[in-house]
Amino acid sequence: MAAPVAFNLTVVGLSIHNADLDTLERHDVSVERRNFIVRGLVKSSGVAGAFLLSTCNRKELYLQHDATVDVKKVLSQAKFFQPGCSPFINTGLPAYRRFSVK
Image (cartoon, rainbow, N blue to C red; front, side, top):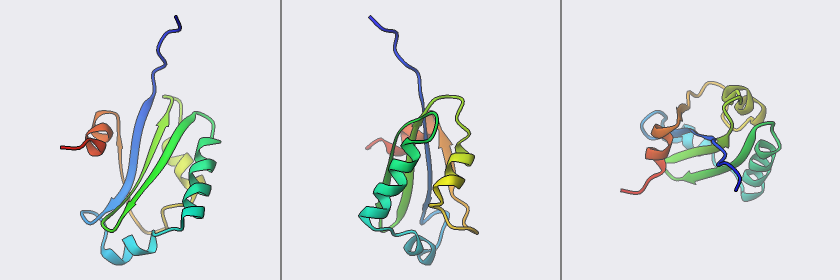
């Protein structure tokens, strides 16, 4: 039996708590663009999985990755978050909590 593989979960995003509605609207993307971003992230070294959650009041990018990944570098290559915005970044338990349903 193979040993379990450890990975990190990171969420990076904008919400009504750290961005105004105009900024959130500027981050709306088509399904095609979303798929392009996610596929590009998964092709990045060390990123095993990714998905983009987009609602009217939040835009969150979830990354499953190994510990060697420079998340900020990966994000700059994805070019999802526009210059001038300040997305939050949570890794580990805070990322899991953000995704969990209460």
